[in-house]
Length: 360
Image (cartoon, rainbow, N blue to C red; front, side, top):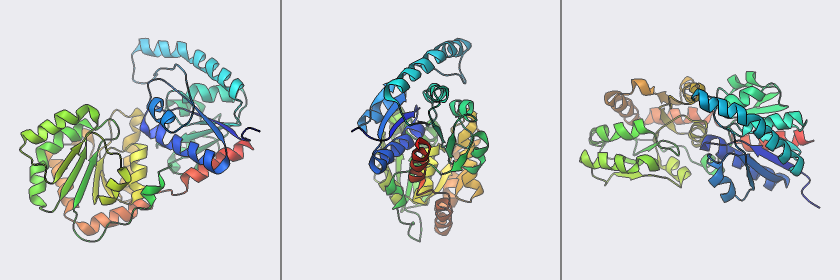
């Protein structure tokens, strides 16, 4: 006998879509004995992360519709029915009990196919404003799991579950009282050019103001050499500064940090909340529908983070914001506590439970 529950997870692209999708897949496999397959596109992170995690991945061809040239949009609209047709074939072959759309390119065609075939559908939306794929199918899905209450209006039967985060983040202790010792800077998997360009210009002043401070700066692979060169050119020694393209042990890095400077993608802010750490958030301005800014504003409203809009980011502004926070240990602790109130430790269990319920 095969597994009694079959689940197809559709979507991907960035870590913000793929990482939570894998957490949901593991929970369904381990807690519910489900057989899980993924459907994605050849140009997303899923091509690497899904096979690494041990799940089968089917690829479909689907392009971008937003912020692209007319030619690209025309090609995408031409490919879309083919993508839906390919997904209809996948559904007939695999016969899933439920299809979960996590946003990203492949999500739209797969969810459309499932709706046409009357296969139960669950949308997962980590951002304040859904991407195009989830907006198109929002009113047709059977249910939706969302990260923030303001997102419920885009979907039928939406429930605020939060975003799945690895359990290690929830195990992080509150930061010890006293002055700050560690600043963590990261720009998601791609790196953040604005941070990579500006931090080398202010690092000497920052380290001089806080003689006990150490800094870890994750640059992303693309900007690693130029950022390292900029620090060297500024005459910064590496006794108290670590510059690296990647960080594998992210939970350990969060645990050691007193303050985190980063983008405000859904996964990043969910990890900040789970870890209970103060943050300075610099939203990526090209994010679809400016969703990173909306994610950051939810944290600012809760008193959990400071926000710097990239267009307003100057060396002086960055230095002032970091200095005022690093110099106030009790404020960092209070912000961390408020961040933790935004965390959802049971998100992955709830989302998997919703999928199982729909599969009925």
